[in-house]
Length: 177
Ligand code: OFO
Image 1 (cartoon, rainbow, N blue to C red):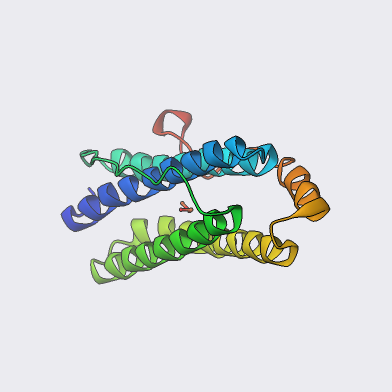
Image 2 (cartoon, rainbow, N blue to C red):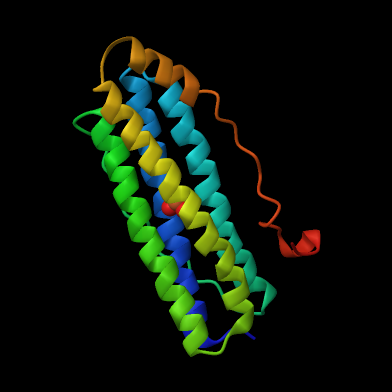
């Protein structure tokens, strides 16, 4: 059984993680429309990652006999002032998500829900990586100043990113993590 408060909060987190995917997919489209295919690819991979995050919460609720209540996803912005502005918005969003994960961790401790606490530790660690990646992107773009050869090279480098399905996100039918 999953405690009522945890189930409600996890349902909300599915919405936040799916909004992350929507936001990054919108950024991917905008970056590609600006001729930055590599940065668009980076954001496409980020979108896929975010969907696995949503699925991790989804699987956890169902594995514990909870019920699902999918919430509406807000419309993300469709354009940004510059690539740097887009990646700064991504960093700001990841900081927001870290705050949400920390709130969930506090709730799981308050509710003595150890199964959630163990699952959430994965997200605590993941958010360190998410903020690190987002910060590095902002720093790199800041150094380049958004122009010239450096921009071309960074775009090529970011385009190398590929999606790897995380083993920690298993469906109930696959036998768990
Ligand atoms: Fe799901 O970590 Fe980014 O938002």
